Amino acid sequence: MEYRMQQTPPNQDKADHTPDATGRRTFLAKGLLGTLALALGGSAVNLKSLQAAAQSGSLKPAAFSMQGKHPDLVVLSDRPWNVETPPHLLDDRVTPTDRVFIRNNGLPPGKVDAASWTLTIEGESARTKKVFTLAELQSKFKHYTYQLQLECGGNGRAEFSPPGKGNQWGNGAVYCSEWTGVRVKDVLEAAGIKPDAVYVAYYGKDVHLSGDTSKVPISRGVPIKKALEDESLIAWAINGKAIPEMHGYPLRVVFGGWPASASGKWVDRIVVRNKVHDGPKMNKGSYMVPARPIPPGAPAPDDKDMRIIESMPVRSLITYPKTGAIVKGKKTLQVRGHAWAGDLEVKEIHVSTDFGATWQKCELEKPVNRLAWQHWKTQVKFPSTGYFEVWARATDTAGASQPMVVPAWNPGGYLNNACHRIAIQIA
Ligand SMILES: Nc1nc2c(c(=O)[nH]1)N[C@H]1C(S)=C(S)[C@@H](COP(=O)(O)O)O[C@H]1N2
Ligand SMILES: [Mo]
Image (cartoon, rainbow, N blue to C red; front, side):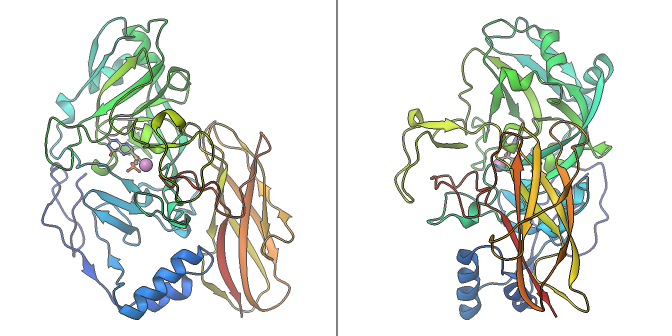
């Protein structure tokens, strides 16, 4: 369960949870032209920066190597680790753990002893303070397994102009894996919830980037109503195995459909609050958007004029074919992917191969459970050979569709749910 940067295939002692600080990345110049050729269909902004980098020779994609992770994930930063998944690697119905994006605000806790791990429930609106060992959580409460879709609030940020503050995520900071654990509500009810409870928040054991152990890198939460839903979990397993170190070993909370920042990793404390939680990253514009729209590039409003992001907006991905594909010898192609809509369901999804002039409806499956993403597919018939873009646009049960261009600019670069676009050449 250990992650290391390394250049040789992994073969570490599975009991050691200490990350390797001496990790290295290799840089490959090859592949750059390929990247340029495939950069179509995303955003003009990215394409320009790729071209500029190519001219100056400064862009060298890094080869990524971390135990348990797919080598084609894209590293945005390595301190803290922020690593995204190219959409074509998200083609599976249930995302394999090696393809799950990584978003850390601080440094993982290092060596973790699951046998002595405890979870404390407390806070102004908890009737009693309760402490559970991991084994007690597992033996005292009923287990549930759900497929839950999680997306970083900043997914798609790279397309905002001027750029939003933070990691320049493309479209791959999203996934849907299968989580197993106990319900947040069952555990909170064991402690008792006072009627004035408003918010439920996590604290984790990760370390602030400064190394200062008195500082908390992130502590966020959700309103009590979301916390008490059936699908809100305190989980110890993903896809049937212990959660890997990078994703919160040994315990995390999972709130599907909401910004993944609410789904705390390495969780050792849950607080029931009588007011909106005020932990780090619940303020100063983090995971907030202006309550009223502001012009692109305008200064960030005060928090009182911002709203905390809750359920994520409708969105979809095209996971097959891979952008840049050159298709030979046929003009009809299966196109497929997933769609999701925060707390809602996706009602329909369409694709266009003529830049949004006309749309064709796709086959769409129901979610396997609430808050799981939904699979869609369709046969696309291209009218001729040549260059095409495929755009996908999902519509939720409340009637909202994905915008075709980047939506409301906001200082944090959150909530870009514009249509996903891929480029195809029919040869
Ligand atoms: N303790 C802790 N929990 C955390 C974070 C963190 O830095 N520390 N990052 C949050 C953010 S912003 C996201 S998007 C998700 C990412 O989860 P993943 O790395 O398992 O994909 O974890 C959330 N939970
Ligand atoms: Mo995030």
